[in-house]
Length: 333
Length: 142
Image (cartoon, rainbow over all chains, first blue to last red; front, side):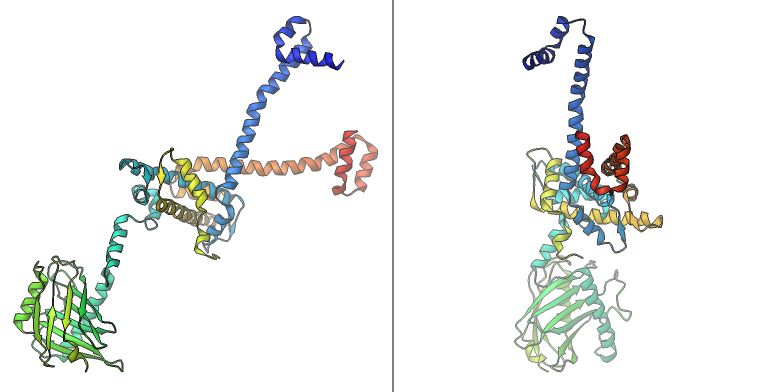
């Protein structure tokens, strides 16, 4: 009996037209096959759909961890409660976002005929697409990065803020010095010498060359004493609003040494330069000459000779290295 | 409460996989680029959170819900994100309902089967719901 059953099912399943031909008067049988066929036909799409939806779910769970996303969301202190679907949506959104950002970055990779997606491509993609504006600071363009690394290379680097700060300092001292100093200088230019505790000296020079950004400079001293100097030469320009009001454009340089005494007091010691020396310095600051110039300066008050070396590397924005030698003798006081 | 800074980044492996899926074969991604994308994604989530929270606050709600997120997306003009996210939200709701439905089905099954037999109803009323299920299954099999 079982064999018979198997046979009939076989004939039905394998070649149903033949089975139908064998017993044409059996509509019931045919109906069953049609129904089975229908079920069979709809079976795979159904299974596929299920699998696809499962796959979607799996991906979701596998994709970006909801707990992590929730953690990130909670970083926002204003956020109080988060419904269950929100992290899920965020995870999806972040996934789409990564997709989008990657593709946009890849456009730039292709533009440059490269096969490797670089960081800069992403930065470009971000800067080119308004909706990604919020990321501009997160992935900055490489130019900025290069600047940063190059400035890191030098010992003392100054960003404009710092320079501005020094400039302001210089002005304050200028004003203070004006009152105490009657050395016939109306300080169109001021050289300020501020001692620091290291051997290195930081010199900021803001000169007439039209560049408002003072250049960060490095000075080396052969100073053997514990006091070293920060020399600031600020030349008020027409463009800087910070030009001192009492500037009468005589163009003399007032050189002030600040000496920190062990007790912490700051002494300001004015040093006078001869007009010729000033002229030399000014030329150094303004001109494009590359050679170092050694100035023999004798400090008028202290009577100590000073050699100031001012090599300038061209434009105003480039670092200037000032080295003062045998300044140490005068600073002990 | 971030223990370390890494906790706030999305996992590298997952990000790398998404990136790889996005790009055709043979395109490499530098490590820096991957890091930058991962970081950007973190910030994106935070940015979107803040926007969604604003939306929720506007509606004087404390909870960020799904529609808030979608509204936030359209606020930041990432319009092409909306459709997939809506679908995603629908899918999520469906799954949730399916789960609920399954739970309901089970409980309704418990109630409906006994109706065939008067004796059973009495039995059911006496029983607490949790213990009925195995007994009923047995009956169905018979």
